[in-house]
Image (cartoon, rainbow, N blue to C red):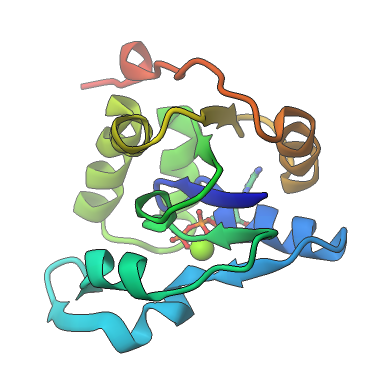
Length: 163
Ligand SMILES: Nc1ncnc2c1ncn2[C@@H]1O[C@H](COP(=O)(O)OP(=O)(O)OP(=O)(O)O)[C@@H](O)[C@H]1O
Ligand SMILES: [Mg+2]
């Protein structure tokens, strides 16, 4: 099964991917695969704009893999796991990275609105939101494997967003 492991920055994709790799799954780091598809630098966001549509057409994924990255739901996969996190906990995780307040706020709001989950559900039928709030990457990996291949309802964190 081709699995996309996506989610807002800080939801724990890389931490969970490391856990899954440790259990023998074939994890692919999408950010590295996208280096040849970079178009320009977005200085305000400190990130790269990439040609994800061309990458999705050109990159051939092995039939069993976990594609990890916040753009992985744009690829042709069998199942999408969207890591989710409550706004309060995500804020702490992103502040802990030393990110500037406006970048933290932008990502916390995007997560509360469920933007990645909605994008994934527009493109795929087989999508599952996995709540990482209060769970270790190991517990999240357990959950992901037990839900593997299943569609499940989206989570709603909008009520928990303050201000
Ligand atoms: N389940 C968790 N519980 C608590 N902290 C976590 C959890 N998962 C990840 N973290 C911490 O949150 C931070 C972000 O995790 P990680 O780098 O895995 O996120 P990411 O989704 O890969 O983000 P990005 O999209 O920026 O690569 C790290 O400091 C990590 O240690
Ligand atoms: Mg990461």
